[in-house]
Length: 34
Image (tube, rainbow, N blue to C red; front, top):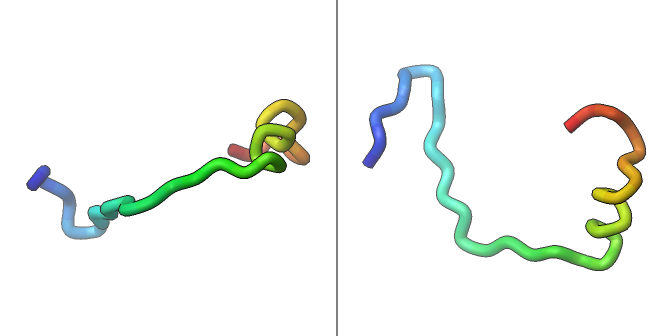
């Protein structure tokens, strides 16, 4: 396990996926925020 600060959290991602609209949003994001 990595060392983390008291005010941090450790997250384990079990599953992730990409949909067709995700590709469109990546190409032309609706705003400049990440």
